[in-house]
Length: 220
Ligand code: SF4
Image (tube, rainbow, N blue to C red):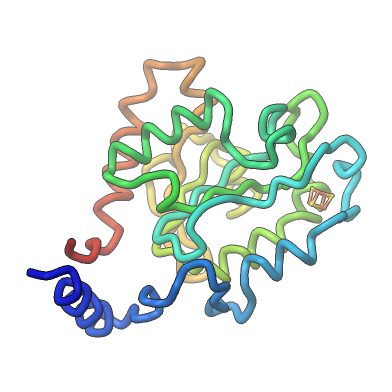
């Protein structure tokens, strides 16, 4: 099959399954079902002083990845490396997360990664409830713009702020929850797994559950 005819088959398949927007160039910001693009949200957030965390940040860590991601990850907040580089999950925990993503046949560029708060809490403490409350509307808008097929929360803090679930992560992990019609699967934070390697097989189970939930990838 020539490259042109292969593209034609792929285009027909994407139309058939109702995702023809994937044919558009990805660099063009396409409005999501929420009616706004990630770039519009990012622009609005520039220089945000919505909570006290703005005082200690080097940069706002907005989020990274595919604006049409089928799978989205939500962590807690930027650490020192993320604050410096402006990208979530870039340190050792980020490397571990990338490995988990790779286990289910995806790349970091295929998914979208964001945090509950976009500025680094001092001394890597967990975000205070009022900080999370101030920042959460931006995350919700990101979720609406991306409209992923599934969300995976990483750690108890993301779970409690995104879904209001205060149960221990050990009890809730691997059990589907829901946010505005989007299935949400909690699992452990990779930083926790770096300190508790014996729990990593549970994360593998959770990622298998995630993989089963995602729609099949287009052929080719
Ligand atoms: S954490 Fe969120 S709400 Fe607070 S200053 Fe940063 S971007 Fe604004």
